Image (cartoon, rainbow, N blue to C red; front, side, top):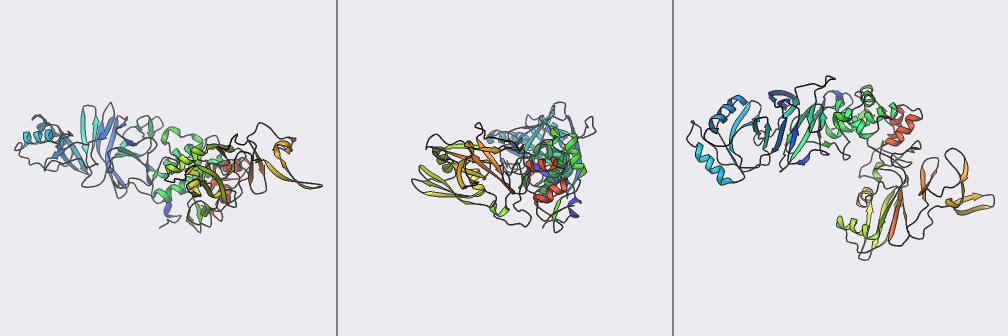
Amino acid sequence: MVPNVQAATDQQYIRVGLESRFKDRSKITIKTKRIGMGYSVNNGFREEVDLVSNSGFSFSPAQGYYFSVQKVFKNYSQAKQVVESLKELDVNAYPVILYRNTWNVYIGGSTDKESVKVQLGKVTGRFGFTYSDIMKDNQYRILVEGQGDCFLIDVDKYMAYPQFVSSTYNSSGVPLLDLESFQYRGRIEIGRYKSNSLKAVNIVNLEEYLYGVVPGEVSSSWPKEALKAQAVCARGYAILKAGFRSDSTVNKPYKIDDTTKSQVYKGYNVETKATNQAVNETKGETVTYNNKIISTYYSSTSGGSTENVEDVWSITSPYLRSVPDLYENEPELKPWIVKLTKSEIYSKLLDRGMQVGSVLEVIPEIRTSSGRVYSLRIKGTKKNVVLQTEIIRTALSLYSTKFKVIKYGDKPDTVVMQGSSGSERKQISNSYVIDGNYQVKKASQSLEQYIVLSEDNRTNFPRIVPKNNNTIYFAGQGYGHGVGMSQSGAKGMAEAGFTYKEILEHYFTGTKVR
């Protein structure tokens, strides 16, 4: 169910997977010397244990065999007392946190089951305890080591990992967790999530999350109105994609991550005064259509026109329409040319299970109204394949689908010019042009491409061509899927004097910022 505008600000925390830095790790270290450990239940966090270690805290998968004391303890101290007694029998014993106010004691840890059986024999009948059968690795357990102490985390029964919060503050009064060389607001959850390696999740207030997104996505030196537009876009995206949830879920620990697959999020390290101010000045605001928060997609550069969503993904939307992007005068990625040999194209297709044989020809079959390639036919000696929409971009490692295919012998900068005696075909490279400063001059011979501005788009005309028949040039503009807001275009509109609301309502048809 899509939340309404009022409900969007009722809750505060989201879960963000820190995939760019802490995915599939064999070890993760929290360097903060004093931290609190607790659980989030019904989206409410309660700290239960205060942990102190001058060397920080190291987390690693506990992949060995263990058996447990058949008794539950209310706190760490009770479990620790039993551990100290058991260690006198020359066994490896650990306090284990299972859930809120629920501790146990495990013995073992070796990947050699027979050695753990020996430890079971040593403790059987001692101290009045009974013990479980030996347990194999469940792909949940974690070993936490601090200065001179350690304990285990096991979520097999209650299916919730504990979360960690800083007990100290920086000079600005912000409690930060040092996750190795990176700092994060909020809380950190480290888990295995039914795997052999570790992942880290940041549980963070939505607005504070945006502090680390806006400067991760765009430069803090951009005009304020562009930064505010980015903040509003990122807020709506996070609300709809992540949802408000802080409780641990071991089967699906997060819905968004910190990479370009979701939104680039770099935590506290990249925060700036300008980007934080942009977040604060738009607090709670989102882009709405019929009073509902919308999916505010965005990409780096459109190349002169954004795209209708149905021409990129298999959905339709009245507000994700193609619009002119004529203020994109300083694109983050300038017009580009990707040069691929036919054998490289063959290899890229083979990586996706497409065996076309030797590549003969590459033909754009269908273009969208914005000039993007919707359907691309690749002819091979064995068979032909047709790539469509975003598969074109990802399969061939292109920046966007707004491109022209240039082959040996082409004259791609040829245009039809209208003169007093009629029309004629001429190459731009042999012509005089009016540049962006309205100066008439001979077309530059150093440019790879010429860009021609029309009333609703930009069109590229490459000057260079492949030197042989074995190479194909993909000459294009834009960077990303092209749906929704262009970050480069938003910057240009802000420089031209548009407000963030005007920017957003331009890119998202029929919407209001509220």
